[in-house]
Image 1: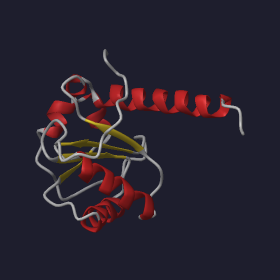
Image 2: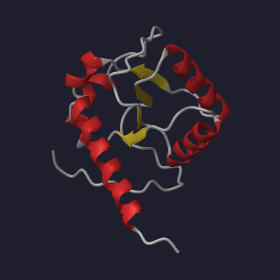
Image 3: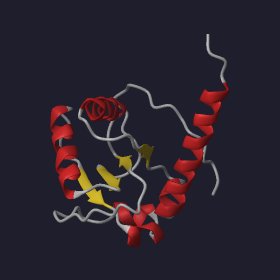
Image 4: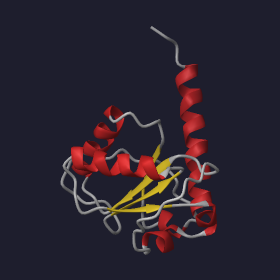
Length: 146
């Protein structure tokens, strides 16, 4: 995998890469319904939700994002909790993340689909997100407190 550097998302109307969808990992059916409410609270509409399962780990993101959203979701606790977003504006992303934080759902990884990452397998992306999270945690712990 190459070019796995994180980039800060701005606050513009620029749309992120890909189709207007969010791939959810590690969610129960009830939590997906709660996420739909969060989208409504954030006043963001027209986003299809796709639920990943363990079979999805070996699939490339572009194939997962080409799926039609399904109405039946099964909890798959073996997956790290994550939301991989595509096709929404930067402003919408911030609105969703703010609504998520106040919506009572547990912490999760956030990622955006990119022309590079769409060729990664979901398992590779989730592993990379875990590594980045661990590196950031270690950086925070190493900082002197003032």
